[in-house]
Amino acid sequence: KDALRYYTRTSGKPITFEYVLLRGFNDGLEDARELVKYASDVHAKVNLIEYNPTGDGEFGRTDAKDAEAFQRFLEEKGVTARIRRSRGRDIDAACGQLANKNKVLGNAEG
Image (cartoon, rainbow, N blue to C red):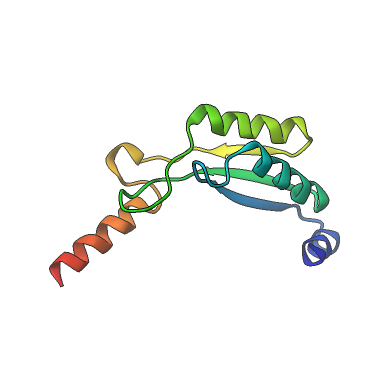
């Protein structure tokens, strides 16, 4: 935290955390409380990122209503938070999905 505070103080630029929401892993109320404490302490804003499942991973995508509730909680506690919407998910081409498909295809060929 000291390094983050130092950066903000010396650069005058805000800190932004990129927080990937993983269903049942880090998207609960207690997780939101912990994030509020940490972000508030260093005056950071938070970009909430929707996870894009690849089909072979153990994590799932947080429901939209749960992601919005998570965001609302942060905002109510004074932390600026935005949900970054992913594009290309409907054709499995969102961030992380296409790379995984290429990896699988590459392994099948080699």
